Amino acid sequence: MEEQLRQLVTFFAAFQEEMEGVVNSIKEEMKAGQESVKEEMKAGQESVKEEMRAVKASQEEMKKEITCIIENKFESMEVRIDAVENKVPSVKEQIEETVSAVEQEIDYRVSAVKEQIQERVSAVEHRIEGRVSAVQYQIEKQIDDKVSAVAKEVDTLKKFVATAGSNSDTFKFLAMPAHPSLRLSTYDGKTSWQVYKTQFSIVEEANGWDSQAKACNLAASLRTDAVDILQTLPENKRLDFEALSGALELRFGEKCLKDYSRLQLKSRQQKPTEGARHGSLKISAMGSSSNGLSINGHIDEIPCSMIIDTGANITIIRRDLAKKFKDKLIWTPSCVALETASGDKIDIEGKLNVSITFGSATYHHTAYVADIIDHCILALDFLRKYNFSLDFKNNKLFSAFEDMTIDPQRGSSRNAEVSSERPCSESCRNHTEIEEKPETTSNSPAQMLTGRDLRLPCDF
Image (cartoon, rainbow, N blue to C red; front, side, top):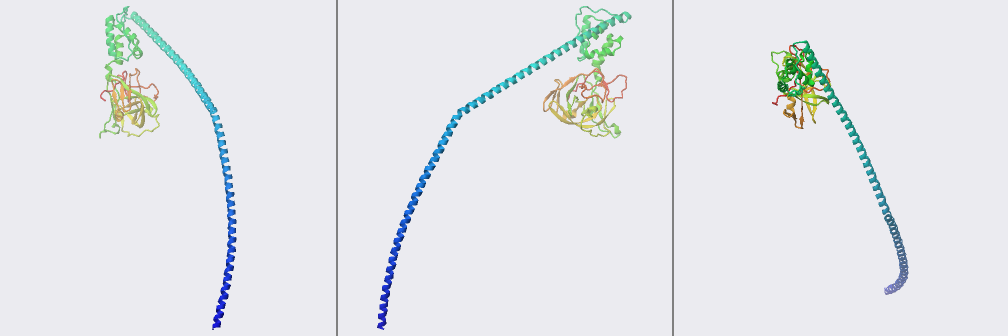
């Protein structure tokens, strides 16, 4: 047992020695490894330092290159700036030259336009002067012709009176005073016959004229429409003072004014006892001593003259004028007609929706179509619809848009007849004339009275 313990102790001692040798060898190996690692680390540090030095050197080179590039750029920019600064004066000079050239061109063109305008103005002035001269010449020629015609007519009348006086005891010509105390004015039918007749009576009484002298002077004083009366008298009555003054009284006197009429349309209901043709629009005749009022305008772009009639209830357009419009007639019952003061019937052909233009405004209205004398009669329905008012004293028509002057027109001495052949452009009649021939029956629906125009009543 002890032997075994000795052996075991010996073994442990040997093992311990062996272990110490191993540990020493390991320490020596570790020392040798540490030395090699230190050397390697030193070598790595040296290589890193060299690489850092190389990087620094490359950075220095890059800085130098960047600096050179920037300096080169600045130098090129300075060169360009210098070039631009050098070009600015030349550009300014070019701009100034261009502006001067444009100003000169504008001045030249303005001068050319002024010259053209002056030339045209001069040409227009020459034309106007030429036309004025031509008109003056024509007026003077017409005056000379009229004077010559009047002189010839007076000579003819004197010869006729002398001849009639030598052949008949009825006509005894007495010489007129060589120097009459009063001079007789002329009469053209446009002024009041009653006023002129009174003036004529004063002159003939002052000059001491007899019947033949009065007839001769009265005939010689007639002008324009009034002188046409001589053509209506027989030759043996032309120097009959009573016959001549009677004809003038009939044509221009106050006596016949009651016979002048204008159409007044009044609506009336058809009575149960009346037939289909009795349903009509009444037309009554009204007399007045004044002139009619009219206005020029367009109906559906067709020019015409329109009578303003406050005595008519509905607006009427003449048949031949209505045929020129594009719109078709609106049918109306056959029992509707127009009736004159004498009871004659005028059939209504229909209605039209038209555009009536005068002044600066256009009005839309529905008008009846019938065979009347005037182109159009603007009645109360139109005037009330658009709130018109009339100033008869100053011949003014007032609307919501403007004030218009309306024309007072006198009637023609010729008899106007109903005709569907008269175009609208033919000397538009600015009044409503109705002629009634004495002792003659007329089948015409629109009966007429010769002579004077009509004036609208002032109660509107």
